[in-house]
Image (cartoon, rainbow, N blue to C red; front, top):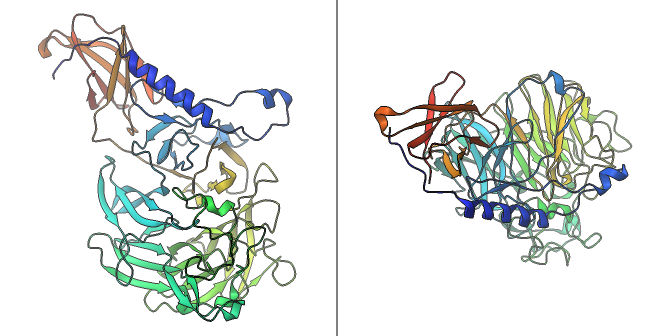
Length: 532
């Protein structure tokens, strides 16, 4: 053990942190007005700033629901704030109180940030790249281990150029492959939808790529397997927007592009403004190993043979093979079992399918919903098993969003550009929810994530108090201050419980060297921090 002496207070870092907090607060737009006049006049919470790291985190004012008292889980919420108005851009892991656990130091917009399993070990995955057209991405998928070190980067291949992976979804399979999405521009006959014979479209492509080698295992193209005329997208701009994509959808992938390249100012279908007829936004595996593909613009899900690419059946939309029970005339979108502009389709072992039913944009309903369907492949019917409805009946997500079913039966709903995250019990009772003030996260999850960062804890001393944090460490229960004139004489001075992202420990000896040790619940030393 090497003991380090303090070199005086770090007041400059405190001033930088305070300045960052003030700047972040100025960037936050006003929240939606509360009904109560007192709440309406209350100031928004300021961004979180820290002494030990030059980073900020957004405030997450958590509201507990009726089912909160029964929730004793220590699982963590996994978010990725991505709007420029946010005090933080990138991955963000927080506990059930909204307290930060990990703040991505990269400070860049990321999408579909979540925990998956690769080679039997938990990993973090996320998309990072560019957005030259609103609602689409061109980049790569990054894979981090439990030390937050990058162990793989996955991208497109085969007939697609590298770095053309889309932002919407990236699913690791049990075979060590990843399902990627992409939007290549293809010349195509658009006369079926009132366009030119020599028009252009964004195809919807799913590639299965071996993570270790980059080899493309399979490629599926929407143009090769679905009917262009089944789209709900339009070539003509509606209310100033093109091809069925709303202004809200511009936040579905944008990062760098808020307005795109003029695609919303003229009819779609040209090389400069291709028609987004399909808009693939998720691709996962069914329990039988087929692909389940979601098309936003078709209001439909497709079960696809993983090898041949053949569509086995279609659920929803104009060409549904199923009777969508409870729907209005002609399977009216957004009613009964019929979803609209949906995201994040998942097939579960019990035979049900879940989706986040946006119902906008353009709107077909007054609010979005989480939706679980019973899909009977013998009777060819789909019926509503459960809806998860927003606490605000006007909460309509024009873009983005997801629904995650947890192991205990609870569900987490990310409300996309409506900027809320909610957790419910399986039968719809609210556990808790919180807004993301000043921005949005493409998806929201909750996971049992345990990590020990490769970077050491950060320690800053001010007077007789040491402030310590360990960005991303999930299992720290307490901090122990050890001091002495040398390693042989070092002894414990104080041990204090971890008190959030950053913990204060005092008193710090003036005439001795010292270190701060991170301890788990059993008292095992996980890591050691020394003052700067």
